[in-house]
Image 1: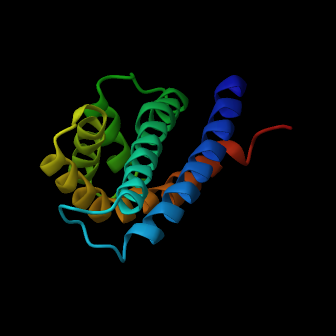
Image 2: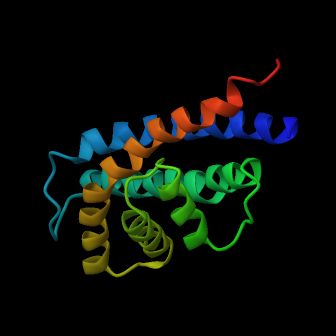
Length: 151
């Protein structure tokens, strides 16, 4: 259990760093218009945003949710199972939103067509606040384990 608490502590730190990086990119992209013919600088900003979005979602879903399941003595199960349990724990508001986040993350990793990339940029802009807001809920939930951690 102590090893899992230490792992959770490290993952929470990684989560907060990833959220801060995503927030920076989100703030830079939010006022921009997603449209065909964007210049290279604008494309680069959106590409950084999508990469940071994917990174935060991976840390959250693939690492933190899995570690919380282990600490709560839950079976690992599928990604959908982890997301559903996170909703039951009230660390995310909507399992459906996080399934969408996961699907967008997968599209980011595998999509190269220009029109689809523009749609991904728009979806990332829409979903980023949901993803970032979950970090605080995860932190609050994790404190029941981290507060008892002996240093």
